[in-house]
Image (cartoon, rainbow, N blue to C red; front, top):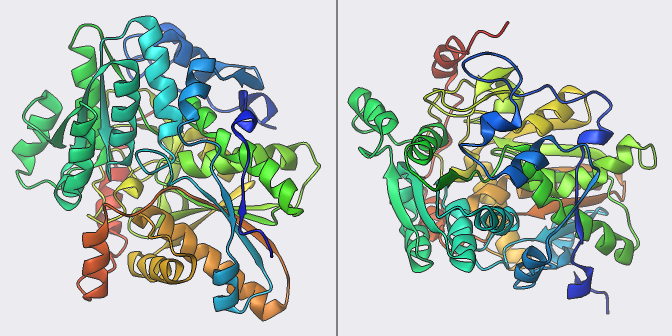
Length: 453
């Protein structure tokens, strides 16, 4: 029998994270201070993050050791399995070989726990008593709730309102682990009140929720802020995915021709792709294709500007050089809440700018259609976010069927959809629709991009 799963032992959990910064052919543009416009320094970030994470943000070291306490927590679910999608291949009648790394087996059900555990650990080590954060679909909020439960830290989560209402069990999961979860925008912060004054029925956005969480952190003692995507140290922690996958692909006897992942802020795609991008940069595997998949209604890579912009709606964060739709753009309320972010991680944006990664946008209905196909072939009910990646995988596999090429396709399956069944119910009942690209709203947001000398 052919192996469907390729499984590593716990001793194979990576002992280090891979930092791509020293291997980039062109240095990553620096983040800028929102007040001075000068490059951000570690001291500038000290009110928000513990110094260990700040140092990782700037680190020139290629390999950064994973603390044993973090590796011990990883043992709850890592290493994660790599699957060969034989049933999907058969259904598509494709010669392509399809592999996927499944991150849905973590306690919160997604890849987000890889950085949540690390961030909670470093905050606890520095004496942080309380954390604040935002969450879109709730995967990040629940992952950090787990991390804070393990390391005994208080947590308040600002959850984007539309997802708070669509996914009530994510809130209950966070509360089960001891966190407080509120729908954003709230009346708890000046940033939230300002949004509600303009639009009392605001569906919220990740940009708004970030503003609230940052404001909360800087106005309370012994409190830090934690972010689940975008920043360098977050993508660093996620490289455990790709590092494990490289070993597993060796076990399978294949190397990927195409690597695919969905992107909101970029962490799950980056976690899978970056260790393989190292091979492309050093010339050992120059022909690998990397595709970052985003929704057509919030397409920062394919429609956005490559510019300095705030990471949040209120302009409290440093200015990041990234593909952006404008920091005050509020995306349509698509069900893939984790993909509703106006910008893209600076590292992913930089790799796109260099032509190493390409972006592709997928409509909501096409994504759910792919999710149904995947559930009926591979058995896994996927969160709405990875269904976008699955759609792109299916399209690439069909191309192989048409050309007769037996390419190897690898994608990161970032999490299960067990708390998204109302979304599937709406899709199967014909109640979901595609959201058009909101061009006029994006133009308005683009007009408000900060001026940078």
